[in-house]
Image (cartoon, rainbow, N blue to C red):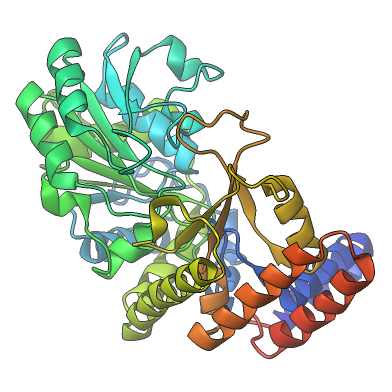
Length: 433
């Protein structure tokens, strides 16, 4: 890392200073945004290699440009590793982001005006799943399922099945961004197969937990396609994987539009259907990250992340905080401030930011408040687990958070708490610093 920084310092001191300042912030503060993590030194270095200089249009063994011997081997290695890790028949490693991957999936597996059945906008929605502000909502009609009621925090599968039988969707989408429990993938798949729909899972927030069998894999429950971003909890570059079941064939030749041919249809949807040249240096980082994720210590990391989340949930409840679903099955804890007259997400988020802890706001099902003023605060344990904090440290941090909430108007006290947070953070450095 030092050589790269020295080169930047010599070329562009302003940019060098920005990098150093951000590096210091990440080192001295605590990252509890559920969708952020730290990449390893190897992954960061791989993205800064000479693969950044290479065009590699199309796919391994079928490139348009010459001198692809190394890029072909590298991308093939990434595909092989992704298939093994996620137990899929095929993996496309060229999608530029989760949003781009979702568009590829919709646009090339469906026909314009095909109906998509997905989570209600007010129940943990996401922009790329048909929000009215996106162009995709003007092409596909979206029918929305939701939770049965706030008391049970469960998806109403009977109502979903009734909607599926009525509207005959071409795709049923399983997804969540702030739901701390497992989904019933088998029930999703049963309804999709009953109406002849493609079963798709957007697992961007929990792909890493699926990789090591810590949480269930939708592909093991008859889902046809699964997308996961790679830059959240996976500790990988900012990218996406599209994983699928079915027959893999030559992407240069258009296959029939059947469910069996989904892997090849998806390859053609990524290139040339939706985006053009892949970023080979990022795919190099993905290949390295996939290798890291296949190691036994990554499984220990995934398990420790869940133990830390459970410890955090338990400690918050001991302090009489209200948690969405009253527990967590994954890495997220959602604090509910909807019934609190003195503390809301805005005060909580700003207070924690003042002491060096990053978190993020979140909406709730049928939230009476708008998205920029929601009722919940979302906290995630992956990043600080990457720094190998364990249950004892997590419990201390909960008490420091609670202490900050109790003194949110006392700036001198918050400044003292920030020093405590910094001191504890420095005991658990970011791995590559």
